[in-house]
Amino acid sequence: MPKDAPPDGGAFAGSTREGPFGRVSEMQAKLHRWAVADSGFRFDDLFNFVCDPATLIVAFARVEGNRGARTPGVDGVTVDDIAERVGIPGFLDDLRAGLKAGTFRPLPVRERVIPKPGGSGKVRHLGIPVIADRVVQAALKLVLEPIFEADFMPVSYGFRPRRRAQDAIAEIQFYGTRKYEWVLDADIEACFDSIAHPALMDRVRLRIKDKRVLLLVKAFLKSGIMTELGHFENTHTGTPQGGILSPLLANIALSVLDEHLHGPWMPGGSMSTASRRESRRAAGLPTWRVIRYADDFVVMVHGTQQDTTLLTEEIAHLLSPLGLRLSAAKTQVVHVDEGFEFLGFRIQRAFKRGTTKSYVYTFIGQRPIRSVKSKIRALTHRTSQQDLGTVLTRLNQVMRGWAEYFKHAVAKNLFSMLDNCAWRRLIRMLMVRHHWSWSDVRRQFTDLTGRWHAITADTVELRRIATVPVTRYRYRGNTIGTPWDPKTG
Image (cartoon, rainbow, N blue to C red; front, side):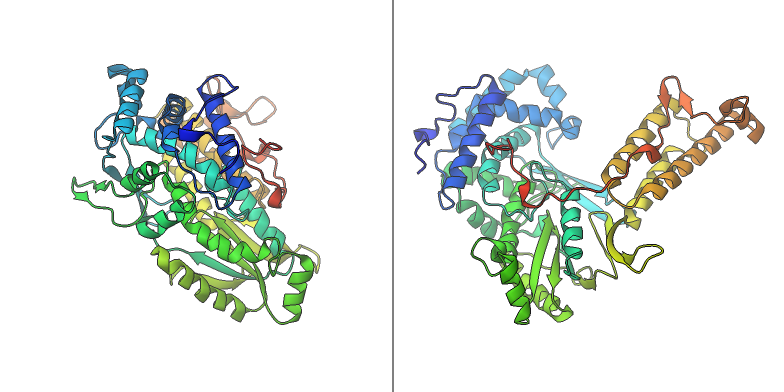
């Protein structure tokens, strides 16, 4: 056991930082430090950390700050209802008492079916827990995340602190320019719904020894689903999308994949140095690099198409004990010259215009383009009766957020096109609403010199996303730290 680990879960004994947020941050830093110091250490006495008043206060603040705070679970209660009826301190005291007494039981999650983005026509099944369950899940995450972050591989980017989709895309581009030309573009079929509970709990037990914490995690996995039709269904597999703890549990399960494929890159491995990788290739053996974002991943291969196909079979066999399988329809082996889509981006090697030199470019995929256009059309329907200020505010939010995500791709011309699309839709909406002719439009939105003004409503102005700087994202590689590292925290 690490030398400075306190007995009996002394979560905040001797804490030098004031306030619940500071104390929880200090506790997380200690857990992370102990996990890094001993990769085989199993943590006991964590339950008191989960139940500590400071942890529950921070967990509630996380839940309250989420966009779904006003969305109720099966009990119909929202965060605002709790504040009005019993008050937040009383709610947290009762929740803590239930946890300590062992009487806390998660309720079934409420099913909500939403369309998947991109206009594919497919739907995603979300599971919305009640507020109490969300707070306990957030408390569990505060305790478990620093421990498992010490073990997660640097090639995993989804739902991890200080990591983002752009890091995964930058890594693909980095290795694509270094002759990793064959790509396994993989899709795990219904990953969140299919993860086998025994295999997942075995992964959790590698680090967690506290039986009360393990039982709590298992209780959330087995809590069941209340469907939209009002029928209760048991959950024998999977971790419902929509739960605060679900992304962490999915990463714990899929770390099997990371460890297997990235293990050779670790110190002493067969791909750990440039010379060792070169030796493998000289012997006719491939080298590869996996890049994973939650349940989406690609494997870049410096080798042949056959090498990549063999890796596909190896990965399918690796995922089987987890209850997971690759989608036969969506998993494909492609060459970087053909291009492939990942996280909304299209990565493809192409000749630079006017030259004979080829580069790996990051474009924007067709599906997110269709998605944002669909949102623009929905907001600017010609018969819309929404206040113009409301329409402009929502348009700015949608378009600006979309542009911020894709601003590191080849996007400048596309941003201008979407600006023009939104402008034309708005003008058409105003012409129908006010019975304007084109002369009326020019009179409203041009000055005496014929220069066009921006469309405004009071203080709200339609903002052009073409003004968003398009820059190349800097590849950060293995330099990304965690919030609990002494050097980067």
